[in-house]
Image (cartoon, rainbow, N blue to C red; front, top):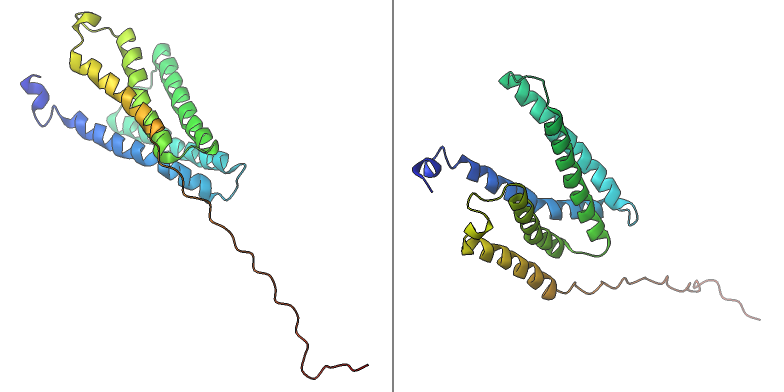
Length: 190
């Protein structure tokens, strides 16, 4: 790593990486909590996803527009850039929707998100390397990189193999109404 990458200005990207880790780390549990809070066992996940879409609109549409206006950006968009970005948005939204479907199929946030965050880097590495091969070819990949990919796969396996058991369902006690008692002055003699 050169000196330009270790200077405070050269490491700004790492701050954003940590912000993303925190954001996406919170995403699954907040989404699951929102789904449950909808109080609709059948459609709660879709209601929650609707509000995820509203949040995306506010964050991913209005935010860049304001920044581009502030920066005086041109409003030309090359076709390839638009289509690749739309594809990225589609696969991102599809992934978020599939997380909800996993929750609906009795996946828990701890297991679902752990698998997502151990499996996604593997997919990313394979696709990124095929789209942008390393300068020295695949033989130039360092053993530490390969070990990291293998460790992510092993971690995903271990999460599934040793996932925590859910708590037993709580028993609901239904109180029976007390039997009516005879009133003291209401005795009948035959």
